[in-house]
Image (cartoon, rainbow, N blue to C red; front, side, top):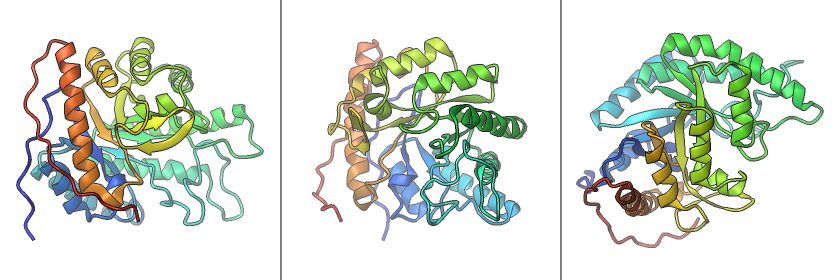
Length: 325
């Protein structure tokens, strides 16, 4: 079956609007990329996982497979950021385990070093597919560990990874996550400060987290990141959320002021990828991705008009209703 014709897409912006492959897990990767490009997105947040680009196995083979994915991206005019939040990519029994702020492995059990190795592989894959950023989070502090121990483990992990990333021309981007050791923007800024603001370490911000977890609105969180650490914002994830609830929602189902947060990205001169992050909506990916695009097109038109920049035309398509599995 041939792919449908590409649809008119999104207004032109200094940053690239994309879609996360963790929301396309029911699609083969080439077909997922066709869908993203066909809907007018400009990039992908590419999550390393078994069903798309598996980070396990021989490193040389990973590089070859990543280079092939890079060719697939370029053929569709897409850019990418490498995401490392695959749920069971390291441990089939424990979600997102092990973590950077956990202890080293013992008695044959993998520990912090397994997560460091995953990020090392992510850097090598990113370099091979020509992605400039690898996004990561710390994970929650394990029971029995003190905050000081968690911070020490994190800083040691980054000390191992930053030289490799620098040699590869890849920037690491630390994402604050609710209930993680680095949970809010100010926690992430403290890590950057502790390391002396290295050029190879930036920030990932999920705009929904600002509603769920931050003391400021999403737009204010973007502006604070720029004010406190100009140029540190390296990756953005787009979704909706409700206060106090870490659940990624389609736009319009939570309390994210989408025009304001997009206006904030324009104001601070952000020029990286801003990708939709809906990892639990793969069952209706074509519909959800199209609706997301249309919501973003409307919000971008408002944001660009507010900033005095002319917008292009966008497409709006009727959607069938798909039941939740």
